[in-house]
Structure formats: structure tokens, C-alpha cells
Amino acid sequence: MSLTSFKIDTILKWIATAILIIGSGVNSLGFYPQGPLLLGLGGLVWLSVSIMWKEWSLIVTNATLLLVNITGLLYTHLH
Image (cartoon, rainbow, N blue to C red; front, side, top):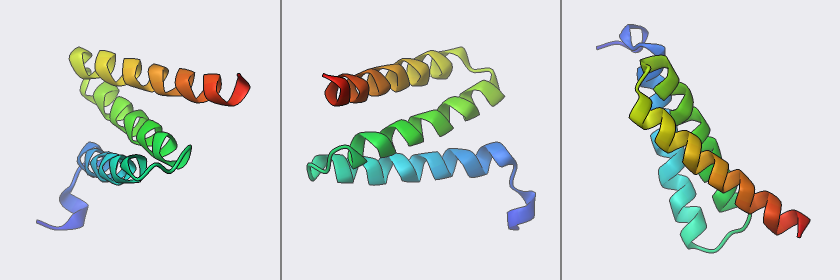
């Protein structure tokens, strides 16, 4: 299968998955705010894919996780 035969959602879901795996590793090593920022970015890309698929369970999950992530980062930096 060639790269041109992949759909954009397939490419994005694997990019998001890679970002989340890297973000989890960075986060577990205690790098702040890099870990949460990577996790938020991965969640945002997965949210985009979820919207493309119109899959409500993934939309709600990823939107909620992204909101919690952003809220935690803002609380930490503004508090």
C-alpha cells in the first residue's frame, strides 16, 4: 500500500497516537509543561479525527481530556 492511498484521517490518527506515546513518556519523566503540552496536542489531533469520523464517544472523550489538560495548564501557570 502506498502513502498516497492512505486517507488523511488514517495519517492523522497515527500521528496523534505517536504524539500521545511520546507525550506519555515525556510526562512520566517529569518534564513539565512539555509532557502535558504534547498530550494536549495529541488529544487535539485525535479530536479532529473523531470529528471527521462523527464518532461521538471519541469526540466526548477527547474533548473532555483536552479541556481538563488545558484547565490544568492554565491553573498551574496562572495560579
